[in-house]
Structures are given as C-alpha cells and as structure tokens.
View (cartoon, rainbow, N blue to C red):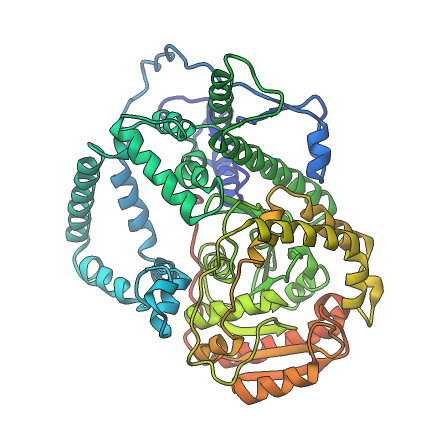
Length: 600
C-alpha cells in the first residue's frame, strides 16, 4: 500500500500450505481498510515441458506419448527496470533474521516446541538407544532423549528475558555464519551451484581443481551409500526445491555436456554418462509428479474430493482432510494402496465429530516415488513428520497391513504424538522374545534384486485382479475396476521399480510387539478372520500372549476389512474413539494446533 503497488507476484506452488497463504493474502487485500481495491495477486511458474495437447493423462506412458518439448532456460536479464521514486528500498532481511522471526512467532505454541524436537533424531538412531544394537548395524545419530534439547533450549531462551533471548540467538547465529564462511573458503561451499553442476556432470573426467575434487568425493560417497545416480538428489535436491536452480537449466546443461562429448552432435540413443542420465531422470520425474499432483487436485475438486499436497524432503505427498472439530485421526494404507483406499471411512468418521486425515505414503499411489532406499523406518519418519507438521497435535493412528506395522513403529519410537492405535489386519511378526532384537540395515541393490523386482512388477500387474478378489472374500465386488486401475496406474509411475526393489533388500524387521510394548498406550487390533495372508485365530493368541495393551476383535472379512465391510468397521472404530475421548476428557485439555508460518 505504501509503495502504491498494483500487482503482487508469487510463485504458483502445488503445496497446500503455500496455496492457503496466497489465498489468505488475496482475502486480506479484499478486506483491508482504506486500501486500493485494484491490487491483484498474480502467480508464475516455470514448467519443464511445452505440450501441444492440454491436460495431463493419469498414466506416465500416455504422457510420454505426447512427446512434449523440453523448454530451454530463460536468458539471463542484462538489467532490471528501476524502482519508482516513491518506493522505499528498505533492506532485505538476512537468513539469520528470518530464522529469528520464525522462532519468535512459533515459540508461543507449546506443540511446536515439543513435537518439532521429536524430529531431531532418526528412527535408526532411536533404535540404537532403545535396544542393544552393534554400532556397525545402525546409522549413527542423536540420542533418544527427545526432550533433552528442548529443555536446554528452554533454559537458554524461554527463562531469559525476551531481549536477552534474542541477543543470545543473534550471537549464536553469527558464530555459525562465521564457521560456515571459514569452511566454504576452501570447500565445496566456495563454488557456485552452476560450478557444482559442471563438476558433477564431468565426474568421470580427471581434474586438477581442488573444489571439483571435493565434489567428486561427495559424489563417490553418495553413490557408494545409495542407489545408482542417487548422488544427484543429494547434491541438488534442496537447490531445486528452493529454486536456486531450475529443472530447465539442469536438463539444458546435461544436454550440452553430452553434445560436447559427442563432437557437437546429440546422440539418438540418449545420454551416455550416469551423471547426465541421473540429472535428466530426476528433473523429468519431478516435473511429472508436479503435473500429476495439479491434475489430481483439479479432478478431485470436480468430484468433491479435496486432495492436498504436502512437500516432504523434496517429494510431493498426497493427502486429504475432512472434519472441522473433534479429536484427530490419521489413516495409513497398506502395500500398493493409497489414501483413497479409505473411501468409505473418511467422511463417515468426520460426520461423527472427528478430524480425519488420510495420506498416501511416499512411493505409493500418486505420491512421488524418488530413487531412495525404501524402508519401514523411512515410512515411519514420514508419518511422524506428517503428524508434527500437518496435523500439529497427537492423534489416533489407524493402519492396514504394512500401514499397521508403520503406525506401530511410530507409537513405539515417538509415543508422545500418538493417542491410540487401531490396527487393521496389521503386518509384523509377533515373537515371544523381543528384547534381544537388533536392527539390520538393508543390503545394497544388486543385479539380482533388480531382476527380481522387475519380474515381481510384471507378475503383480498381470494378476492384480485375481489377488484382490482373494483379499476380498466376503465382498469381492469392492475389488472393483477403479481400485484395480489405480493400483496398475501407480505401478507404471517413474520410480515404482525402486519401491519394489527395496523390499528385496530389507532384512528381518523388528517384531511388532517390540514397538507395541514400548508404546504402552491403548491398541485396538481388528482382524479379518478370512485373511489369506494370516491366520486370525493364531494372530489372536499371539496378541493376547505377548501384547497386554492390545484389545483384539475378529470380523468376518478378508485382508482389507475397512474397505470390504466399511459399515461394520466404522462402528468399531467410532466406539473405540469414543472410549479414548472419554479417557482423555479428564486430562489436560487439548492445545491449539500449530499455525503455519506461511499462513501467518
């Protein structure tokens, strides 16, 4: 208003929180008193592709058939138009000042202070302190004392006066900044993002440059520890997310490098070096999932299904939310499924007075499928972060099949964010002696695991209809064309093979009772008695023998009772939630959820 602006320009992000922030700004401009009525908010984006046909098909192969042209990067502007004379240039806040602002804004929310601290330790690091694990079998990490750093932070900042706290934080950030500058003077930080990209693409070439050698070392380390080509994500994933370099620029530089290697000609067989291949695959895959997310949101609005997108570690995660009041409930699907698998549960629970979230785990459904090692702990950390960053307060977790095992891990490692558990035909072994368990890291991918995963994908694609009917013995009509087509669609997404291959790299996981016994909260296990994957009677005996905090109930259904007999399962879940609510009523009233920094 003070500079007489007529247009406010913002990037068109697919993330739900960002879109809400832009919408809030638009509403504010409409309601602001004594403000100009003609100020508009315009958004911009930089798509990778230029397509003649409009719309995004659901299948990746159909999208490839469109043969969209990859746009070249924009030319660097030689100058910028001057500011108007009445405009006050002011000063751009530094990163340190932005961090101070965010901390000061959120410090009044107790859930943010407590829950965010739980994200400081990885699941593997927690397992290393909660059980006796050899150091060579677990990734080094921080301790399991979840609130130790929180208490330290509280002593330094909360108990001091606001002015002293701010000054103390400024001093610490200044020291960190000096350390970073000292390290970058002779390290990788001294090289620009374009220089890093050039060094990465030329990784197979010898070099005398010290800064390039350090980048080579980082590439070698990442390639040794992770999947082939995974070094690109580690080096450039954050830069792409933050927008310091565009997908167009990366693809263009990779193309130009390959053309130079071939004497000025572009090879008809594609890129030849693994670095250029990794760079191109990453930006093409990321753009596909961005287009798919936008198309899914648009189609969902037409059908009355509100799809939201959450960016987690640089990957787009699909979820939905229903209900405005009541205790929070988070629904987690099983292997090969997605949040829509709870199609007949979400609205029913919300109508009964609960706030219901359902998410699609990374690597499944329409969520992104990056080339990362998929483990049960990765999915558990995703669920943990979802509760902390999206839900904003402890919730009851509901999980089917491996989803039940994942929510059990979350409850065992981070019980502070779980009100209770509901397991629907949960995966996970139950062993009588769980105190001697050790976590074994996944083995490296090999040609055998790759071949096995490819064969398994072909088998599942050809037999998904028959398999689903076995899993729905009571009501096979629920294994309908829509469910089959969505499972098949996801199996053709770029990166689907990485998920399947990761399963063949996993070693023996912890038994589920190891986590349930450490949770010590209320657990409701619902078991379909006609599940072809597990014996209901035997499962009941094991739960009763080794999980004293579990209430077991059998139902006449198969492996997915929530979808096969939803009315019956909804009644069971509602009765359980009401019992949990009555127990929570006598305790401290629930605190307000975390407010988004962006929306603020």
